[in-house]
Length: 379
Image (cartoon, rainbow, N blue to C red; front, side, top):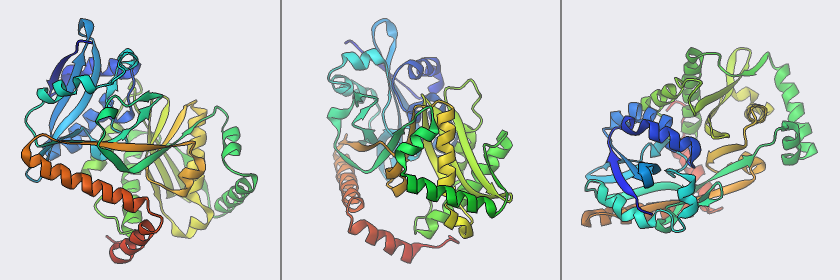
């Protein structure tokens, strides 16, 4: 197939093509126009990134793929990455369905033209690439360099939540959850629901960020959230009802106090988890986080969504609920002599992290050490 490639620094120039392609083609939340422009308007511009929106057009000038990329500065190195990779679970692109069906070798034949269309940089680093998506091999699969350190988890939803719940949790587990729910309700007035307007959504985002920051700091993980992340989430909360993407926050309050919250987004029949927060240690014995998760999954079933994506990270609750785990991959390519140093170090870092995280011996030891030496709820 003859493909003409152009590169644009302003996403607005290709807005209509982008929205049309994501509505009929194949992509993830993290390459949608809404997600990418919100990231550029908040985090990206503050970091001084250089957007490189690669558009491939086939017969009649129709867009058949879009790769939302940026040039990011890493010290003295200029690296090509996915746009918004620091807030994304998956790296994919946007592809026309017919292009995917016809292209047995995916993007491989066009990759040299994509690279030649980009400005001079030191390396390519495209992360979090699933080997397949919705039954299609990743179009960039032949270019994978190594496995990512993390994997993701998904569950196929059912119209009837009770049927889904019974298929995922044993009768004894459901009885235990029901008992804890009653105890939670006995502890005070319980309210679960969605914020009614943008003001309340923004307040919930602020509270969730504070709670999650404290949770992570207690485990020795610091500096995950900053004003850019908060501004990005609030920008996403401005999306109008006619947008293809919508924000989907849920909160659990006990006596007016935020105890647990779930923040995700809805796109393409899927709930994409973003942040979960938890507070009120004295109520943890009643499992408010599990209560909020179950109610959120039930709300997704009620909305007739098809998939619940738990995002990256391994937790027992994800394994209890999920149907599938998705391995992620990385593309790491040098584009200059100096870039060889950067890519060698980056690949070694990713490989080492993956080995540690997948070790049933090393990972618990590291987590315990990090909590003991760096953990502080006041950080």
